[in-house]
Length: 467
Image (cartoon, rainbow, N blue to C red; front, side, top):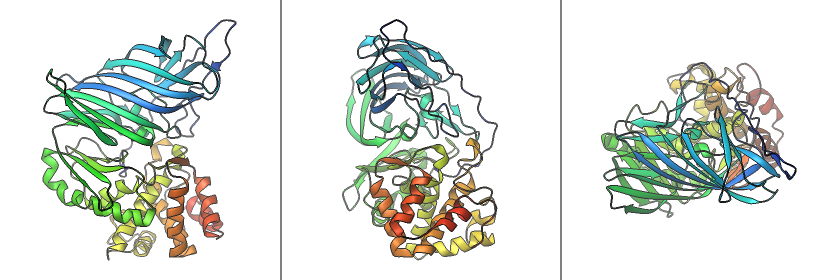
């Protein structure tokens, strides 16, 4: 994600009401209505893990209405008399579980579902939710808008951290990753883009076109996207065979060309630094300038609000390893996403004969903005592994001091051990989740070095560290 620079009061707390089935035959119990994330305690739900989302969407930019059917295949982790889905705003028209109509109610951003029969522990079950309406953005604690964002000629859906609940029901916490199939039907003349590979494009014969997208690798819901617009689409492959699909708003085409042209080269370079590219496709979605206040690393196709520069494309590409393949266990672990992607920018510059990571590190310590405009201040406001609250998970220390933590490890262990650590981390946690504690333990074990001082001073220490 590009560093946000907005600030606003925190969103109103969510209200939750969970009611289980009644009667003497009840064998299950209600699933938890939140996963107690330190910053977003109501995000996600307990009692089950999702394996697959099948989203069938229809959207007409002329009237702004979204019609959706979500088929959610999950496995019960306990006997369930009821369970929750995170869902905001849109009208629920029907819910069924295992093909039988289910009772449901909504309180705040929680949809509580009561199956006709209790679900058994270990049972794979399918929930279908039909819904419709005009989606509204979800406002985050830092004041930025996520969810379904409309434009003059389309829309784009982005979700970090909890905005995906604004356009489909689900278990919206990064610890529950799943495969996705997304089908989007739009008026003829529009393109509909989503994550993964385009399986089919079909004119329906009634003035609409259907696009079917498939993402087989596990994906956190905040990384799911749909973009509708009059895009210019280009395709290709990297030298190693990764498919590339770029969808660019016509007004941003000329400004995007130089950076996107280097994307295949970036994929190849990053694969040497961080290990094999973790997905089958790569690409970009370039929206009209001003659509969003930030770029986002939506899986396989980052979203950009206007024409991106080279460093921004590299940053969002690096997230495909750090954040997308290796996803955080909680939102408090955001530096594992942003610190790594920021350091990838430093490495890209260094490997191309530009400013070295060491020089940037020194510039931040000295406040030397002639080397990096972000070095002037703010990066030391708090430890990267301990943001003070939800509104700060995308603040400067998470990015820049997070990158400096990585450079301090490199200084301590040397280049060979450091780059082996990066490749080992992405390989051993591929398509999984990890916490800061997981990383610190892994780094010490992998490098064989005692890094306690780095953790105490740079990762968790208050105030400005000294080199």
